[in-house]
Length: 438
Image 1: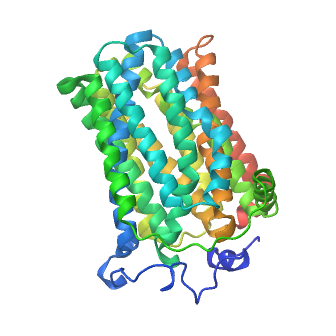
Image 2 (image 1 turned 90 degrees about the vertical axis):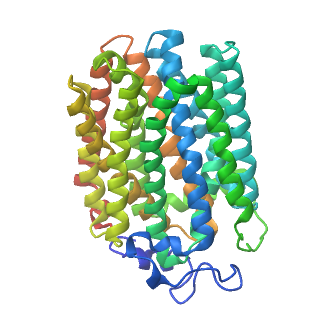
C-alpha cells in the first residue's frame, strides 16, 4: 500500500469505487443540501443526518466533560492524593482493552444505531446514579471506581459503532471533513464543558454537575432516533473469535495501517494519561481553584479545536506520515513543559499547544485508518484502533499513578512523554511505510 493516495487506498482496500457513493439513493434518502451552500471547512454538515448526529453528540459531550471535571475534584476531596486519580482513570478506561474488540465485531453484525442508543442510555442511568449517591453523601472513592468501570464498559461497546457509523452518514468525499468536524465538536465541548463545570460546581455542586450530564444524553439519543439509518446488507458472519482474527489479519496485512496503529498505541500508553492528572497540576502545582482548573482544561480544548479546524480547512493533507510524527513530538514536548511549569498563564498556553498538536496527530491517524479500511471490515478495524486509543491509557494512568508514589508526579509524566517522543522518532527513521503515507 506504500505510496497510495487516500483515494487509491479506499478503492484498493475493497471500498466502493469513486463512481459510487457510500450513501447511494438506494441506501440513504436524499436529504442532503447542495455542497456549494457549505464552505469546505464545514462541508460534511450538508448531510442532514450527520448534522443531527453531530449536534446531539456535541451537547452530550459537554455534559460528559462537566462530569469529568467534577469527578476529579470530588476524588481529591475524598482521597487527598493523586494516586486515586490514576486508579479511577484506570477503572474507567480498562474496559476498552477487553471489550472494544468485541464491540467492533458486534458493530459489523447489528444495527449500529440501536446499539448506540442502548449504550448511551446505559451511561445516562449511571450518571443519574452517581448524582444521587453524591447528593445524599453516600459516595465513596470505591463507589466512583465501580461506576467509572461500568461506564467504561458501555463506552467500550459504543466506540466502534460510533466510529463506523460516521462514514454511513456522509458522502465519501465528505469523510475527512466529517472526522475533523467530529474532533472539533468533541474538543469544543472540552472548552465549554470544563468551563461550565467549574462554574456549575459553585452554583449547583458536584451532584448537580453529574445530574446535568445525565440529562445531556437525551440529546444524542434523540438524534439517533431521528436519523434515517442506511440499509445494511446482512451476510453470514463467522464466529466471534474468527471475526476478531480476521480483523487482526486484515490490519497486519497492510503495512501502513499497521504502523499507524503502532503510533497511536505508543501515544495512548505514554502521552494521553497526562490528561487525567491536570487536576493535580491545577491544585497542587499551580495552587488554583475549580475555575482555574476549568480554564486550564478549556485551554487544552481550545488548542484541540484549532487543530481540528486546521484539518477541516486543509481537506486533503499531504505527507501525512511526517505530519503525524511532527505533531506527536510537539504534543509530548508540550506535556513535558507543563510538568515543570509553575506559572498559570504559561501552563494554559502550553496546554493549548498540547491540544492543537494532539488533535492534529490523532485526527491524522484516524483519517488515515478510515481511508485504508474497507466497509465490511470497518467495525473491526476501528475497534482495534479504539482499543489502542482508549484501552491503553488506563494502563498508562495506572503506571503514572504508581510512579507518582515513588517519584514526583511531574517527573513521572514527563518521563513517560519522553519515552513516547523517542518511539515516534524511531518509527519515522525505521519505517519506510510511515514516510510514504500521503
